[in-house]
Amino acid sequence: MSWIEVSALVVSGLLVGFINTLAGGGSIISLSVLMFLGLPAPVANGTNRIAILFQNIAAVGSFRHQKVLDHRKGIALAIPAAVGSVIGALIAVDVNEQVIEISIGIVMLVMAGVILYKPQRWLKGVPGLTHRKVTFWQYLLFFMIGIYGGFLHMGVGYALLAGIVLGAGYDLVKANAIKVLIILIWSPFILLVFQLNGQIHLLYGLILATGNTLGALIATRMAVSWGAGFVRWVIITVILVTAADMFGVIHVSSLLSVLE
Image (cartoon, rainbow, N blue to C red; front, top):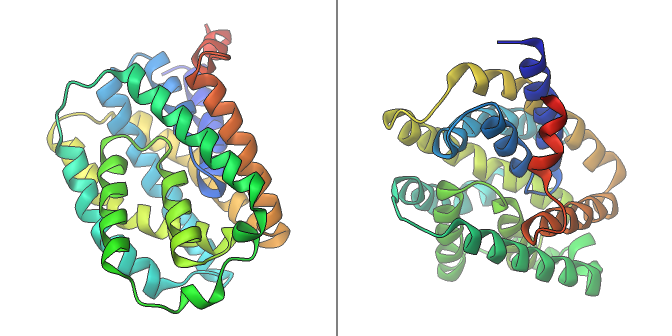
């Protein structure tokens, strides 16, 4: 393995860990890098989960240390999500990838509009909702989110944030803490599925994970120190860039050609 490959994995992991912890969609970078380095798409998808696991171990530990993580609600929401994630990872469906990308782009643009239109719902949360028990519809929602997260991690952070903020009443900082806990809980199950199917490149995954972990630690510190307003603008920026990639306005993968 050359120093260029190692550098590409670590640097991209740093960006992905930061973006995924504060928002979501960062995996578009790591998946592009892994495929650029020669991994088939299914193997890149599985390999990326190693970095996701370590990224969320670091993020959960940091949020917990800073006392912004609601373990009880997070675990309650993680149970249906974890079950769904296993189903998603096991699904072998011949789906038009372009249709999926366009759909994700539309959802991201809608979510950006919601964040811009009613920012207070994202910045302050609804304290009364945070103490309520998880409802049947919330279990169902997070089960469905888990299915998507197991199938393709890219963009799942937005769905989790929407469910946690709008459905459970948390502000963006505390919602991110719960989000990374949910992903941490389902990650080992998804990794096992990909490993059993021979779709993981261990060395690439571990090198990528070093960058993801560092990026996650930086992001959690900035989220707590700078507050929900900062997180909101990170999310909006990432959404617009990712949506532009989905619709072909820009091409993230083509930017990686400088490594050749």
